[in-house]
Length: 42
Image (cartoon, rainbow, N blue to C red; front, top):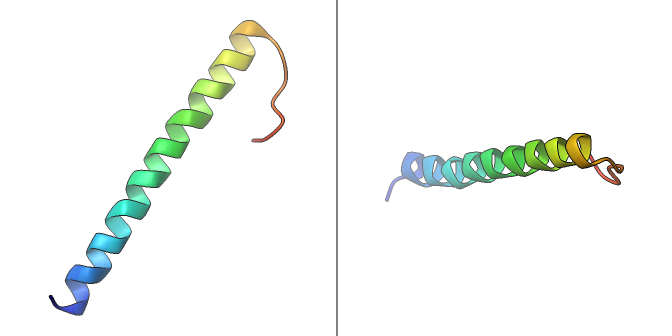
């Protein structure tokens, strides 16, 4: 495995984690707006 393949794999899982966390934040915000309450972390 050359260095470029290793770097691409590394960025791949980072991008996947970012997409997942964005989805979680969006759902939490939607739930908070719909059902009231507050966000302790954003």
